[in-house]
Length: 165
Image (cartoon, rainbow, N blue to C red):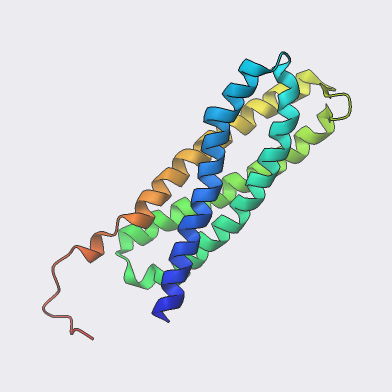
């Protein structure tokens, strides 16, 4: 059973790395390069639409693995850590749901064949909301990783009243 629990932890960290690392690299590097290289950086938004859709799908699997990690390891955690990890996992799930919803609201406002925004007035506030939620999600994900990796219960001195099994 320990090997399964450890495997779930490793898979959760790897999935988190792919999801949040992919998002971070894309927003920090790829978007900047595209804006420097392409004359019409607005067309690159159509690439972003596809990339974010795929990153959100990876996020869905990741949040599932993070929840599974909590289910497997929750009983071994301090209550405060378990509560914090539960809050961050639920927040990640909620923000992901909001991003999926906004993605579906934004899609009809775009014409990918012509590479134009059909209704800029409706697009802009939804796009801004998407960016805000994605930023909140990123900060929550970083906090969750800290909680996932820093395990204070392992550094505590043994409890003399608790029998060692």
